Image (cartoon, rainbow, N blue to C red):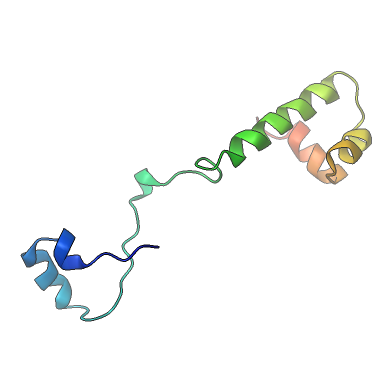
Length: 88
């Protein structure tokens, strides 16, 4: 997390208002909910898992057993079932 001096980014009147509540402390101002990205969206991890899960679903539809898929993808049988029977 990068710290930014409030007086360089906020108008004076807003700094004075904040100082009524906190002085000389570091405060965290979170992003608005509309700016949040889902897990793995920035790194690409979500896309990798979605593609893997789609391959698992296709393999199951093509006749692979749940146990075989669990061994092939190093996942538990329950995890494979969640992928196959869960929402896409």
